[in-house]
Image (tube, rainbow, N blue to C red; front, side, top):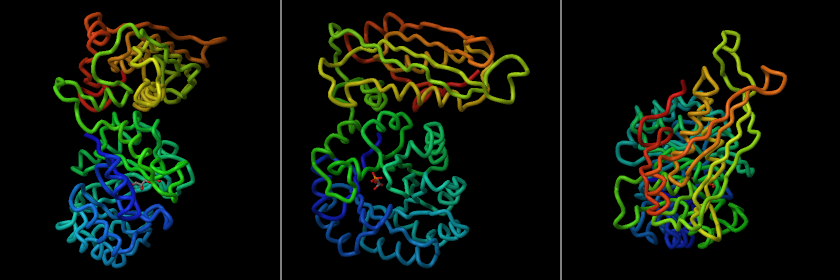
Length: 397
Ligand SMILES: O=C[C@H](O)COP(=O)(O)O
C-alpha cells in the first residue's frame, strides 16, 4: 500500500499531520531549501511528541556533496533515533563517494537517498545506494518554483524509476510539489510512499503552516486500507487511483463521457520500412463511457482522470515502435478498460503525415457484459493491471 509522507517543521505540525492521517512524519525546514534540515533539538522534541505513533524521518539538509560533511550530519541526526534519514544527492562527481561514506551508518539507520527530478538525476546511483545498504530512494524536486514532479519527468520515466528501485530492493518514494490530481496518476506505479508539503499548506505555500483539512484531503486520495469485508482480490489502490469508490455503484446514475481529443504525439509507428527509425505525428482521440459514482463530484475521488488516459498513451508510445495503428488502438482501449468503471471506449488513432489529411483507424470496445453487470451493480471487478502494478505488463506489438 502506498503511504503518505507529510513534511513538517516540528512537533506542532507533526500533531496536525498525525490528526490528518499521515503515515510518515517527515521533519524538514521548508524555509531552508528543498531538503532544509531542522535543528537537532527540534528532531528530539518532535520524536517525543510523536511518541512512536508513526515513523519519523528527518532530512539532512541541502549539504555540499562532501563525504565527511554528509557523514557527520547524518550521524548526528541518526543519533536522535529517527526512523529514517533522508539525504539529498545533488549532481556531483563525489556522489558515489558520499554513498560509500554512509555505508556503515546504513547498517544501523534506515537511509533514504533523495534524487532530484529537475537536476538531471543519475539513476545509476540507485545501484550504488542499494549496494551500500540504503533502505530506499526517492525522487523530489530541488527547485520549489511551482513546477511539479510530472513537469520534469514523464510518467513512463517515473514508472521506470519505481521499477528500478523495486528491482534493487529499495523502498521508493515520489515527491515534488505534488498536488491532488497527481495522486491518481502516480498511485498506479505503486510507490511505497508519496511525499507532500506544499499541498498540505494554505494556498500551497510550502513555507506557510500545514492545515488539517488540506492534510485530510490528500489522505482521502491515498487508500490506507481496503474497506472491511471486501474481496482481497480487488486492488483498491488501483481503483481508488482512478477515482473509484468501492462499494455498490448506483446504476441509475448512468455514465459520463470522459474524453481526450486531438492528443498529438510523435510516435514510432508503421509497417513500411520508411516508417522505421523515426517518429511521425499521430493524433489520438479517446472517449470513455464511465460509470458515475455520485451526483455531485467534489474531488479527485469522484472522477476518472483524463490524465490517466494521456499518461497511458505516453507510456505505450514510450515502449518503442508499433507496427500497426490497429495494434496501438487496441492497446489504448485495453488500458482504458482496465478501470472497472469504464463500460466502453472509442479510440481513434490517426497518422497525420502520410495522407492529404489523416489516415488511421477507429475502434470501439466494450467491457465484457458480465463484468459490466458486476461493475454497474456491485462496483467490484478484478483490477489486474496490464500496465501498472499487478498482472503482466502490457507490451507494444
Ligand atoms: O518529501 C516531501 C517533500 O517535502 C515534498 O515537499 P513539496 O510538496 O513542497 O515539494
